[in-house]
Image 1 (spheres, rainbow, N blue to C red):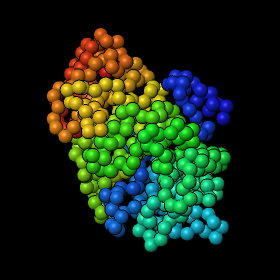
Image 2 (cartoon, rainbow, N blue to C red; image 1 turned 180 degrees about the vertical axis):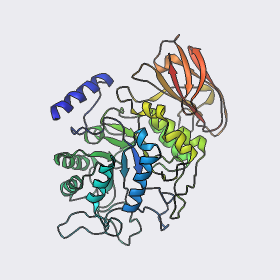
Image 3 (cartoon, rainbow, N blue to C red; image 1 turned 90 degrees about the horizontal axis):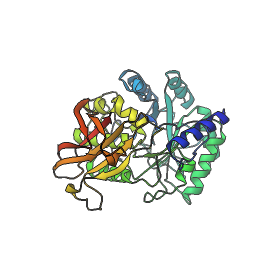
Image 4 (cartoon, helix red, strand yellow; image 1 turned 60 degrees about the vertical axis):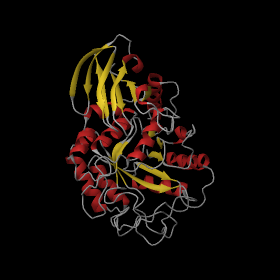
Length: 424
């Protein structure tokens, strides 16, 4: 099996680029994962004083799973249901093993994993490299991290049948991220059970060190993504010129998608958006063209119109999952918009050539003021300068007609974008 995987990996890397680097030789992460995380389901994600902040339990997980199976997400390719910093008990068991909070997961983690697997879904969880995690999740004491237990926790996660591990950088014992991330990576791989590893923090974001692509399937390109435009803007800017290329088994990750808005600090499936639909379209479009993992952290039991428009758009998901073509990045900008205070373009063009020979682009006005018409040169996308394409608005499923050499967009409102497909 490993020989078959190695042959697949080699073929993919020849197709994509010579910089392709193997993370785990275990067969997961060929494509960016699509899924859900519990972090913002009931709360605004960063409200540590609210009684619904960072909660999760097995009943919620089963409801989320049933929603994913019936709301169109499963049919669109979403598979992962991931727990954040909310599931573990305050103490390890008598043998020193990590264990779930008995009030939140009374059936145990393996039982929940088995239930999800029987539905065709995958299960993930969170830990920290240090002695404790980053958040108590409503409990009176710190939650144990994995420091000093990397091998033991990896074996436990594998025994439970976990498919995904997100690792944070909190607690004591944090010394050297490369050494410690490598140790956990090796421990997970040594179990023989395929587990997708996401690195959250601990390393420099500017530049991101090359080692992350050698030990994990994905890594965050910047800090936490929150449902607020100035924060989304920082992540979008980080995707413009990533330190490491996003390639099979090693993906740049923009953190959770906040499409539709987080919870409202109540025990319900309501959403309290802190961004506009225009801003949700722009963030989703950049995540998609950059082949970031698409892990939504808003409540999918209540799929609002903007959530359906973005998260279920099969053409956008095809672009995101097109692993044999290079991930999208900044290819041009419109000089009429000028630059931001950090020197990055206010009107960037993210572009990529797709495996079927077509091209995709996200054209955006990231400024707080309207822009005029913006022009996309086909040559900037990697096409012949005099190429002729039919141009389509992906999210609106609308054709603009046929153009030669370039395409000029309508004027943009602040934070507005177009996700475009160029086909012969």
